[in-house]
Image (cartoon, rainbow, N blue to C red; front, side, top):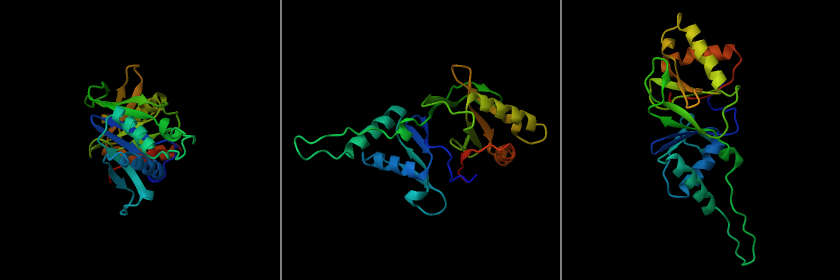
Length: 216
C-alpha cells in the first residue's frame, strides 16, 4: 500500500513533551494546519514527494502539549467563526470536526515498561477509540533507527508472535519490543528500522492493509 493512501478516516495524534505530531490524510492535515496557524502557532510540515503542496502534506508537528493542542484547535475554530452582523442574528457555535474529535491519540511515556529487549519508553493510548483489530499503522516517529507499530492489543500480540517466529531466520527481529499500559495490554511495538521491508512483505502476504509513514 502506498504511504500516501491512508485507509482510515481519522488522523493519528502523537503527543510528547511540548510537541504534537499529526499523521493522516493530506486534506485533514491541511485543515488542522490552517486552524493552528490562525492562532499564530507555528507548525513544521513535511510533504509526499518533492513539492510543497497542501494536497501532499504527509505530517505536521507543532510545539504543543496534548492539552494545548486541543485548546489551540478550539481557539482556531472560534477565530474562523463568522459572527452575525445583525444584533438578532443566529450564532452557530463552532464544533470540532468528528474526524478530528474522534482521532486516536497516544502520549510518549519515557518510563513505559518494555516487554522485550528494548529500553524504557513507549507510546500509551491517551484519547479516542482503541484501534480495531483490522487497523494497523507503521510509523517512524522518534529516531532514524527504529519504527513503531500501532493497532489493537490483540493485533499487536499477533505481530509480536510473528516477529518471534521470524527471528531465527531474519536479523534484528529478536529486538521486537512491546510496550504495556496500566491495563497490562500492549500499546505499541518498537522494531529496528532494518526490519521494515521484511515485516511489510509478511503483512502483505497475510493480506493485511496498513498505514505507514517513514522519514525516507
